[in-house]
Image (tube, rainbow, N blue to C red; front, side, top):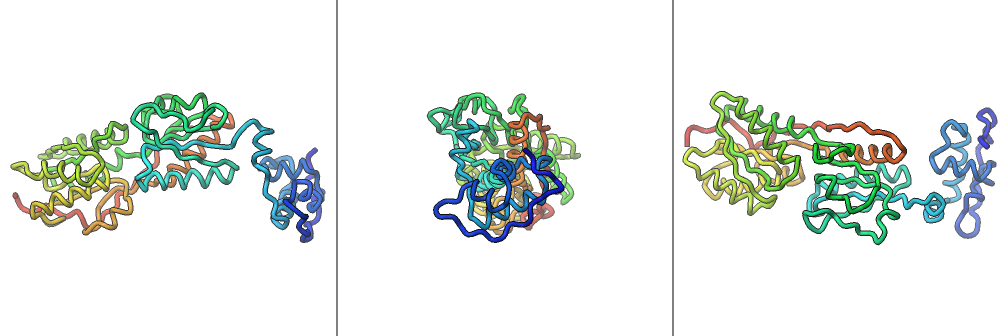
Length: 348
């Protein structure tokens, strides 16, 4: 039964810790309430059923006793592991580490754990669990298609940074088109008209969207021109691709890179040809990873809120698992202007 709102028990005095691990019964005795009330409060389901004063008393008693719920027993009763799988393309990027941090913080507040899993190849991901239908309560998948996580069974899925590739699944995306348009407008405002695009050779929605937005923005500029070379997201590969563009007879005055790592390769290509950034060549990146501040000069780039992507993705998944219908959303980026962009020099 619910505790009456008007009859909250007095604040519990400091309780002596019981021998061994404290139980919910110990908390109930210390707070002067029933075990069912302790379960409601510590399970986060007390609103409307237990008064705020009672909930506060229960939490204070649990803290003073050092009580921690037995997650394994609770999960067995509920038929759930309280486990969410975060599927990411790679573990080598600090970007996905930030996504994990955001998701894990929200998950922890609701009693869930997050397991990170990178597929072994570009095909559909295989489950890291022997019995995926029993081990996973929900899935967050970043920068891939919904089909890529089809091997995990019927668990609820929220897709991150996947655009139309998410199919009917709820999505949390970045507004990457707006970010690329902001880059083009910034460079055009400095006077650039000859653009080179160092594109990521990765077949993902986010990179296709960036490229399409850049092409449309340059096409709308009087006298605007765009050349493109693709590269794996790797400094050496980007150096080669950027070099191809800089060796053209009418080389670009600005290189727009799909990623900050690609921009680092563009810096190398420029300096190998005796070009100064930004005196002879402006360079921009995307994502605003720590690398952007380590480059010299510091890189103009688009900051994407990676932690917030994880926060919003986990929040949407929790809503979906509770039977809700979370709306898809797009998170805005921010153009961060640093020292790698300047007005173009004269004709090469």
